Image (cartoon, rainbow, N blue to C red):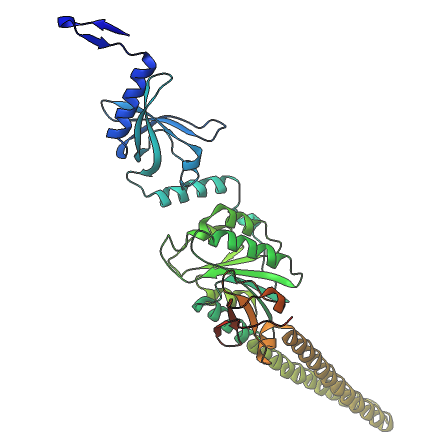
Length: 405
C-alpha cells in the first residue's frame, strides 16, 4: 500500500513485522561479530540451560543471551557484578522488537577464565566436605598390589615403578595407562580409577604425572576426577607435578606427594631397611637370651654353695639347662629360617603374577594404535592396520600384512 508524499510521490508503508525484519537484517550485517565488555547484571539461568543477563557500563546497558549449546564449553559460571568480555552478534528479536546481544563466548576481563573456574569449583567441593582431613584414610602398611594411573610413556611411570621395585622388589604393580592432558584426559583418569578399584588385590592407588602449566594439569582439577578419587574403594595418593604444582586432586586425595617418586616411597616400605632391622633384632634376641642363661647359671651356682652336698643334683640340672638352651637356640633359628622361606615363597609368587614378569619371558603386548586397545585375537585385525608392540623395555610400531585366525 502506498500513500502520497511530498510532491505527489508515493512512499511505502511498512508493517511492524517488516520494519523489525529489515532492522534485524541491517544489524546482523553490520554487527555480525563484535567484542563487548561490561559488567554482568540480572543474571539468570532457567531450566532450559540458557544464560540471560545484561551487560552494562557507566552509561548504558544491553540485553544478552547465551544459548545452552555455547554455555557447555564455558569453564566458569557468570555472576552479577563480574566484568566480562563477550563475543557475539547484535540482532533484533522480531516478536518484541528487543535489541539483544547473542553471545558465543565469554571470558573474565581481569581474572583468567581457567583460574576463575578452578576457584568456583574448589569452593563448591569444599562446601561438600570433600577436602576434609577427617575423611582421609591411612595407607596400608603392606599393600598386596599398587595401582598406578599415569601415562605409559614419560618419566613419571618410570620413576614410580623404579622406586617401588627398589623398595619392595616383589610388589605387584598394576599400571593403568591414561592420557594426562587434553580434553579426554579427565574421562580417561576417571575410567582408570574405576578399573583399578575393580581389582581386588589393589590396596592403594597412585594418580599422577610430571609437572607442567595450569592448562597441562587441568585434567586433575576436573570435577569428575575429584569425585572419582573421593569415592575410591582404596586410598589414593596424588602425585601431580612437582613441589610447586597443586591441583584439586591433591586436596581430595588421602595423601599428597610432592613428586611421583615420593608417592612410590609413601605406599610401600623399604624392605632392605626392614631386613637390617630384622637382623639387628635377631642379634639382640640371642644376646639377651645368652645373658639370661648366664644369670641363671650364676644363680644355680650360688644356690649350690648353700646346699650341703647337692653336687650330683646340680650337675644334672646343669646338663639339663645346657640341653634346654641348645634346644631353644635351635628352635629359634628354625622359626627364623621358616619365616624367611615363607616370605621368599610369597615374594616369588607375587613376582610370577606381575605383568612385567611375563614381558621378561619374551612376550609382548599388542595394542591398536588408534585406541590403545589390547589385541587378543588375529580375527580382530585387518591388513595394513597399525599396531604398537609393548616389550619389557620400549615399544615398536608395526603394520599388519596378513592375518590367520
